[in-house]
Image 1 (cartoon, rainbow, N blue to C red):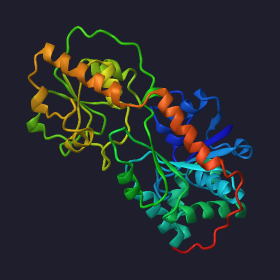
Image 2 (image 1 turned 90 degrees about the vertical axis):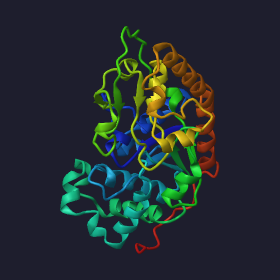
Image 3 (image 1 turned 90 degrees about the horizontal axis):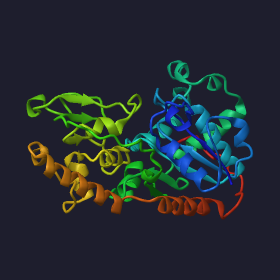
Image 4 (image 1 turned 60 degrees about the vertical axis):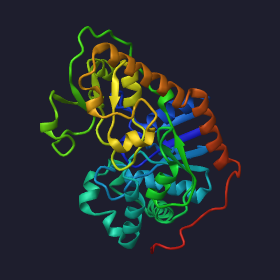
Length: 343
């Protein structure tokens, strides 16, 4: 099957070699491993012959959605042509996607404002009437409560029902754990572990009270970090930082920490989602003063729990196959035209 992965921001379509770990990239890798022909990017030529379009969606009015018009056009083209369509999201702030579509429909000039157009990629700067028809079709769909099935990056302990509620839709929300395709670098022995506190969000006093911390805070940027496992490996305890508004949202951190044989600390909302009986239900006080041997035992317990909990490649392959079959079984559907541009 020929699958075109498109989307509305650079994380969804970028092919840069130094690109950080993203949901779109992991989906591409998993689909290729199952034998599909996959192209990820904004290219229109490949889109025309695709058997399935996998469209990433986010707020169409976000300045960071630089591919918004291109992504909307290709999603709308799939709707109009009846090409099987799966959606996916990569941002835990789920509610803004539908809200932005509703806002754009009320005032289409907002979507094409000079400020936003200055942020768009070159191929969005001048849109034809046909392209705007496709963009409008995608906006109408996103503004509704019923979408095509949506793939959402979640760890196994997350709730797809919560994700659906925050998206504000009644369609199928399909949780996907892509941990099994995460590239893990070679392990390195760490001679001396250091008491450090790591966060993969921009560090501020709102995230962690400086008076509470007795060790340095080291911001971790997955876009520039050459080897996260080695960085995590020096830590007695690792704090990921808050999972913004969505407990169980998929990030590579738990796998990296387990691979580094370090202890993973998460915020209270996340630890409750994982479960009170798990070795992840911890507070900083639980690990700050642990001796090395006990710390190593805890790290091993977390790694074993993760191994039993997270999806393997077979589980991921099966879930993707089922999802593709769900939207492809009906074949080419009747052409769908937008009936209204009012909310």
